[in-house]
Image (cartoon, rainbow over all chains, first blue to last red; front, side):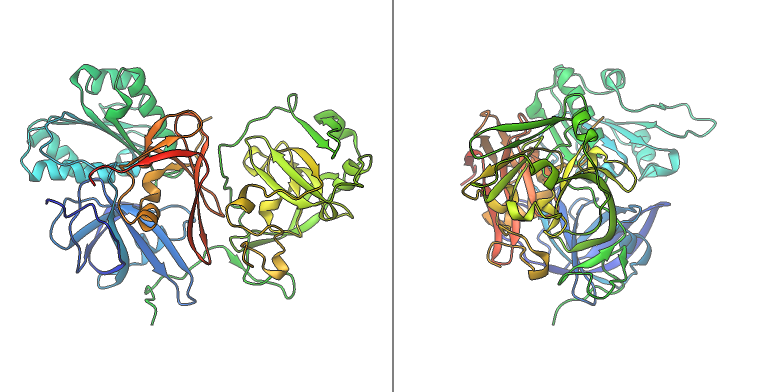
Length: 250
Length: 203
Length: 88
């Protein structure tokens, strides 16, 4: 969508909740319909603004999980223990509720199908959300960019979009997904069971010589270890885009 | 008419505010948020020192062991952050700034600029550091002060907004002329009295 | 131990857009201390209570500080030598 997504001015819009999807026990996707939405690119986010009856306001940013689809915008929210906003979004929000939001925001951690580069995606926990928008866009565009995704999660039930990812890995051309479960694995687990490390990246990610564009997203510590390891493996820093979600992963 | 988000209750961790204990526009919390302007410095006790530099440039320095050898106090104080949270009856252990400034010539110095490991600074009038109003604190809530909360030692100046209680403090420079510290130079109030709600430089 | 108390300029995307009137995360700034050129989205952001501190990803120097004052949203340029905006 030419010119539609990177904006010059942002105003607060009012969106309506039209769907709620329980992705994992503590992650919920919120499907919004937003009149006035001008479109967005995979990787971009929205700012949400919540106002309490006493006038207190809280603002948070959430990555958009889906490719552009008219006025439909979906965010995927992880419940943060003792959080101020996520318990409201994950436990309280109902279909029919209205939320103030603005966006899309972001121009750095953004990818569009059709660029031709190999894509290397590395996700820690809820860091999968903006990367999922990229993958979904790639599938929707029927693209041919080879994609390798490494997903790190605490346990199988914490893998967000797990069924869709498994399906993509078997079905779609050129999308390879590897999952590592860092804390708990099911008894029949045949996959990886440790934190993303140099050995894993060396073996399973595109080599520097393949000149992929890399997107790394998740908790700050995770992103920094992965990004610096990719640099150690020879990737040019300019070919690595990062988005840090902070201590808890957003 | 402002948009109200149905079902959003606002702040978490808000507690009852006892009469007269809470400055204007503050709320009481049981939490102790950990936030900072830069990476947490990790200074070992072996490397740590605290220095007071007077207006002539004369330094008086203490090592960790020397600070521990000084008489300490256990103040219980209320603390007030400029972002509106207040925490009541916090308990600390440390050396009174009166003790540390006792041998220092303060005749020419009206002002002080505190410097921290990592580069943070904040300015405080000398008279707000003396008279039992301030400490060099090295323990909080009965335990050694953690790096996240400013350890090995921080300034504790509870009658001013808490940004003045510099974490990771290492030096106090006495000055004839006031100099704005970090937040003061970015738009916050030069003095910072919570009871007069002096948050920003225009207040 | 990995430092976990910061994010990056992506999180400040909305604030930067308010100040500059356009998307800034993909535009670059030059550190006045070490000369490193970084996209705003890649700058390290410490979201401290009183304001947001943007630091050079190469050397850690404070580049800019964003504070919401009663008068408005203020960005103090501490150590940015230049900002470059493409596609104009």
